[in-house]
Amino acid sequence: MRAFSCERIALVVAGYEIPHCHLHVIPSNSMADLEFANASTNVDRKELEQSAARIIVELKRDGVNGDL
Image (cartoon, rainbow, N blue to C red; front, top):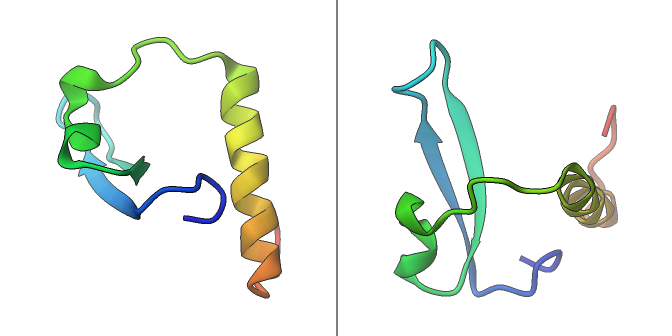
C-alpha cells in the first residue's frame, strides 16, 4: 500500500484464458479498480519495472530478504 499510496491491495487469481494462473496484485481505492474491463490492455515495460522496484523497496523496508 505504501508503494502505491492506495487504500487497499487486492489480490485476484486469474488464468482461465491461459494454461496457468496469474496472481494480480492491484492497488485499489474502489471496487471499480478490480473490474478487468477497466484494466489497461497495453502497459509499457518500463512502467511495470518501476512498479516492481517500488514494491521491492517496501518489502525490503519491512525486512523481507532474499532474491527480490
